[in-house]
Length: 165
Image (cartoon, rainbow, N blue to C red; front, side, top):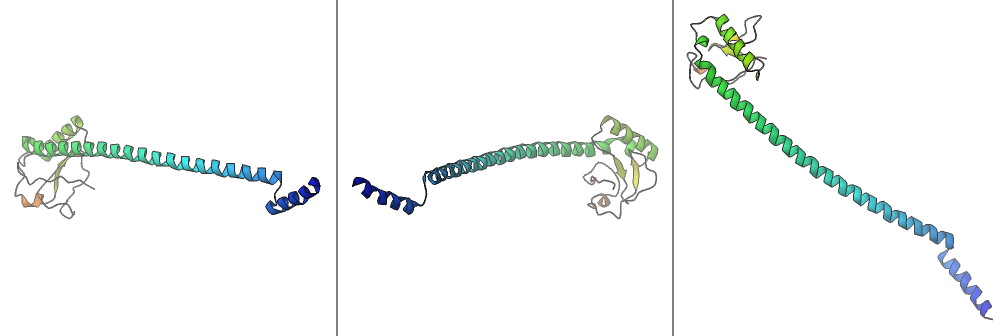
């Protein structure tokens, strides 16, 4: 009698879940893999955030180093622009060859700049550390117009750094 009562109930339970032991084990493994995949995703995102933070720190350090180097270059260029006008060989009464020789010698001892030149107030390049193959005039360039405000070349605040393109 007990057996007859248990059989319909077991059949009803089986139909209610619709899964046997294999199905439930499969669901258990799927749940475990879903948790495992979620944890791996969470760890990967945390590691990505840490990598981004480290990269930002390295970038900030690089920017600070670059800014320090640029300040050093600017200070060096400023000291060069202040020292060159004091050289008597760069005055107007000396030849362009003498001026070019002095700038070339200066450039050999201080290789910080590709070329150093002296520009007259009308825009003509008087001399350069690297020899010129033809005459160059900078009057048509869009550089700051500070050099044209000086009537003669000398020790003043009128000299402006320019480059030859």
